[in-house]
Amino acid sequence: MGLWQWIDGLRDGDRPSRALVAVPFVLIAVVTVVDVNVPPEVHLGPFLVAAPALTASFAGPRLTAVVGAVAVLAQAIVAVSRSSITDLNHMYQIVALFLISAIVTFFAHLRVRNAAEMVRLRTVAEAAQRSVLRPLPVRSGPLRLASVYLAAEEGAQLGGDLYAAARTERGTRLIIGDVRGKGLDAISGAAGVLGAFRALARQEEHLPDLVARLETAVAAHRIDSLNESDDRSEEHDIAESFVTAAVLDVSDAGDGLRLVSCGHPPPLLLRQGGVRALHASEPGPPLGVGPLAGARPTEDVFAFRPGDMLLLYTDGVTEARDASGRFYPLAERAASWTGLGPEHLLERVCRDLLRYAGGHLGDDAALVAVQRLPGRPG
Image (cartoon, rainbow, N blue to C red; front, side, top):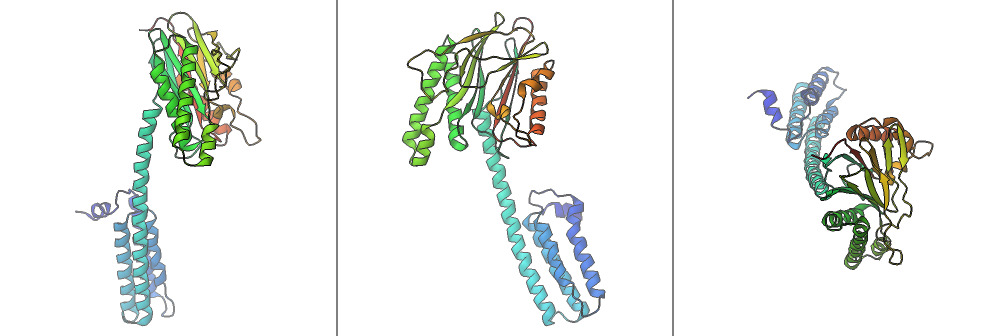
């Protein structure tokens, strides 16, 4: 087995480059050679502690321990070359170097263990995201779909924004929404809405009836959360929670779509170089606030022809600000990208949005692009 193959076996899963691994050994060699040749009153031995300390920052405990042992051996060689290994000054340097090497080896062990735990947690989070916020299908009847989720918190995989699509006998139903709040409560709320939508989307023939049942499901989920909560401040947050949502029904036949808005930003319709916001005639309250005196949710019908693009989004997009505090002009920017397909449109919006916001969003953002293709569904 060669030297590099042996060293590779010491890295505990970390894969620093060979040049980086060579740095502490080169440092030990340089300090040792110089220390042996300088005048007796000059002592460079303490610099050897930098070798195991540096190794602990990028390698595992085994390689760190090896570097520490080599550093201690080098200090002993210096002691023998300059006076004696039993010299009090050199003895203290050797003992101190040994102890420091042992300490940094322990911290390298903690770093590797914590890194492995973070990988496991990230894997669980990604699995939860795939289970709760499933990717939309690329095709659904005559529609071509694309979606993207941008988390405001670095490393986060899922928040309170949500979207889903369900194929029915006559077309495709879509929902996009935003749960008030952050953290686990928002994730739980999003999971509840998505679960209810997937269960009910094929059961209700009319879109207002579907939204009414979603309202009931959200209210029931909130009551269950209140009953399970032991924290009064948490109870207050749950009691004030709600979900803004836009629920759409796009029929395979004809050139129209139906929309019920529950306090959500209006979808944008991109058509022939122009952008139009699809404002509901009578927007309903967010899900969870409660139906208006038993009134049935209002449904609006809009033209959605072959070649048209529908852009659904949450307020994390339009409330993103630049350095001067101005909101992101989504409709204005989208007007110049009407000739793109769903995937390329979302790629362009995301790049432009992050650049506009300085690389960091203040809130989670979700986008869905839906294009009606020419012809009948296959």
